[in-house]
Image (cartoon, rainbow, N blue to C red; front, side, top):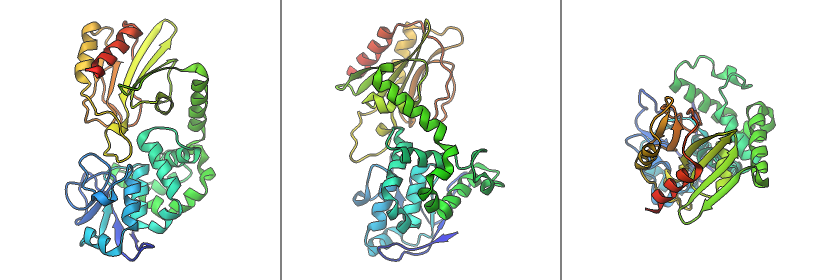
Length: 340
């Protein structure tokens, strides 16, 4: 599938591909994620993005590239003929669209950036940004109105490429007719909006330490992570979930401290595993549960008391268990750790 051109001058014809388990066609430009070699436009840690195009989102980086003088873009690409990403998400879609169809991306620039920020930073922006992010995310789900276009993509790599192909072909129509895909975002959007509204009215108790960039939020029952991120006012977020006489704890670092950003200044990441050991000394394993933590290289590292399991990126999937520690014990351990 071939796409061409830019409003700022012609480029060599570039073919969409995918960098998966079998590698990627050479030579190629990688966007959003990173392949080991070649030109790269990404905000991921360790990226090779030229400084003049850096931005908080890969979509923003690709838009800056698309607006650069033709000679500068040609020199950067060299003999590249393929554009790839190594994962599937909304910022990847925006970055690919900006490179392959810049005229379309320019027409929908604000919406693409808002949707990419919603997906990558997990924070409420606008309802349209949320809707586009969820449409992209769930494009191939069983209840998607375009699921039939993805049939036959049996492998994960094929499935990701097939969705990107659909977005390159139909993306502008989707961006202009969001309501046609409301089945993919409507229910979750209502949940998040209602939780944020209730939280602002006092249903979520917030304790913010701006010096440490740390916030603890207390609620009766679980809350959507986007609700927590939006209300936290910090990049280090502890959720204290209370239910009847039981208390559950889950902490996470937001992704802003993982990406290589320009305008956003999140506190430097700390290795949370020593903190988890401190909490484990206060509360040894019981009932099959224990204090667990992720390394700082994880995009969204967590500390939680619950069943040991691997994290599914961007999703709250781990099973919590009631902790015997008090809220004061846990929050004190966190504040003392970050203060050190």
